[in-house]
Length: 388
Image (cartoon, rainbow, N blue to C red):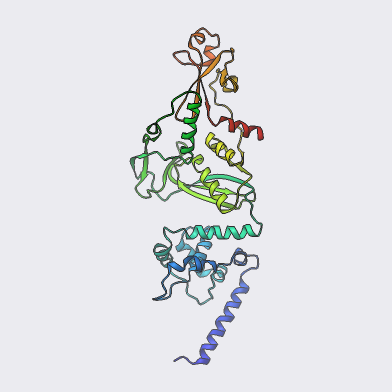
């Protein structure tokens, strides 16, 4: 049996050593700021159902989460390297509550705990939003003005190791709403609505699927940049604080994610007054969604893509009262149909266009007929432009 006086002496030495350790951590070190700003004890409530009350005691879940904070805050590339850093870094030890002589857990311990308890759960998402709410309560963040963008993160997968697969095209978030409005627009023009199978027809595409990481997506930026990657989509406030995130395969277009991302911000933080994004997000679906939500879209001007020597689209003037277009020579392009992509088609009279002096600047169509398209959500886009 240990001598009680010896045990007390050892405990006293440990306390003294930890106090020395506290003094070694600079007062302006980031770990001190994190410890002061965040009460990590809320994690115990989040993980209580993941731990058993019987058996050997496990590593404190707060320590496991704090290890993740250290890794990502200080840009350490792996948990193995993080553990190595903790062994020799006094600030990291203090942040974890370890003294000089406390043994740091093996890196595999974190991996085993993650696999058994945290994998396929939303634990880290809950932690993210809990901290976000703390920041919101302290008036450090605001959803008033939201900025949306994405970046690609290279996957740990060889771009030459893949299988080609035929997969079904993803259903977009706005698809149901668009289909309803297409049929309503057709009926308003005296056309029959499309039958359900017109929209439900299964469309497929060929993709490259990594044999190493099947959840990543094959991303092609240019001839030199081809890789398997993930897309990290983020919404931030005016000070750069992240308000919401969604991770998708790297071959997902940015515009498909704005709606669910903004919905996430509305649910977790609050409704924005305005959402700013780059030209990749300037689509009829996004403008319509934000317009209907009474959110101001801040989207950049995009120059019309017109073939050199041809009339630009704005040279064809839309007459809203008569629902038609007037071409540069004054002829009328009448409504023809609304296609399943949501575009109204306006066509010129062939017999007049054949002898028109502007034909060579108007169309290269073999039947000499000019077709101008207008999305059924074009009105919302115009309203947005006027507001801007």
